[in-house]
Image 1 (cartoon, rainbow, N blue to C red):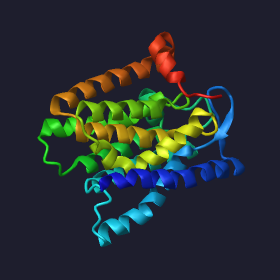
Image 2 (cartoon, rainbow, N blue to C red; image 1 turned 30 degrees about the vertical axis):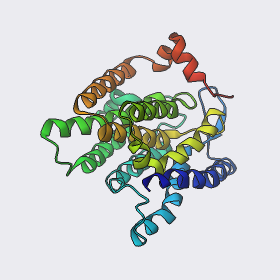
Image 3 (cartoon, rainbow, N blue to C red; image 1 turned 45 degrees about the horizontal axis):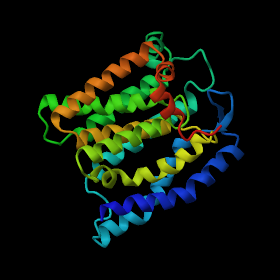
Image 4 (cartoon, one colour; image 1 turned 45 degrees about the vertical axis):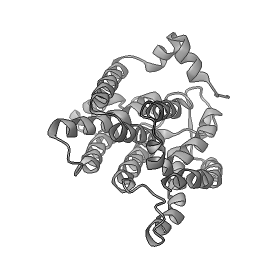
Length: 279
């Protein structure tokens, strides 16, 4: 019954996310998006909260009633998803914000550290590394496989950050990866493993696509973590190497070039990027 987590999280999200967006707006927790509109921010914190609300009935029933409502492997990955979302929230709260002069990208954060200034992005990078190392420990991987898993988690989490410059873009990447893995390996395990977090992301996409809320680093980190975990737990060894090479290439490209500009140049990607967007 591992599949139960997804519908339960969806119901919890339908209750929590709209109220959370209203609460953020009423509290003045808003930020300007790429078009200059002021949106509720950070939605990622609300998405994590909705997942925890869904966990409240599932966890005790899974343990006390022995109903197998949660995938046993979720314990391993739960800390990573929630942990990187918290690190993103730290960046949302005291990081770049609306100040154009603060660091962006790995190079920018490295310059901040070398200059003796606190970079929340650097803290986030180190914290994400620690969480990824913890999550992948004990899997019985050989040294190279362990490093591949570690790098996949780190790069996937960072890549969702690079994508999250337009409404719904990170969520669409998550959907494409999920569909590809489920069809390619003819399995629903990715949905069963992380269903607890998928309901809130689906409901949250309604608000991001309609430019009523912004994910923030907390939300994009959460989505990137889901992508990385799916790759680590579903892909074959050759598939993980291919995915790692692709993520590495995209990460390097994103450090030096605009991913948004590249998407605009390619008609298929441009159409996909604008799909469902209302603003």
